[in-house]
Structure formats: C-alpha cells, structure tokens
Image (cartoon, rainbow, N blue to C red; front, side, top):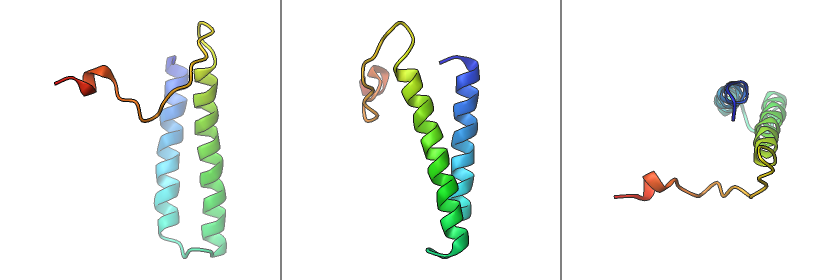
Length: 77
C-alpha cells in the first residue's frame, strides 16, 4: 500500500470512528440516527472498496486476506 492509499485509509477510519461516536448519541431509529447510519454505511463501503482494490492488484497477487490472521511476529513467543 503506498502513502496515498495509507493516508486515505487512515482518513476513512478516523471519519468512521467520528461518525460511530456521533451516532451513539442519537436515539435509535430517529431521522438523525438513520442519516448517521447511512453515512457510516457509506464510509464502511469506501473502506472495504479500498481494501478490495488493494488485495486484487500489486504483482497480480489475488489471494484472499483473512482479517483474523495474525502476523507471525504476533504469534511468536
């Protein structure tokens, strides 16, 4: 992932966290909660889209990424 993609992903994750925090202060099912949920869904789609694009390019490597997989350094010790 290059710096531009990394920066975009970080910005999207920050926006996702802010929107989730904002939505938590709304009454579930209210118009403002529904609007916030729609924005959160859009952010989640953008994050996933960026991840899918990343996983299907670069050297033709099209392996699926297991989000639960831990790095070898995390398993050691």
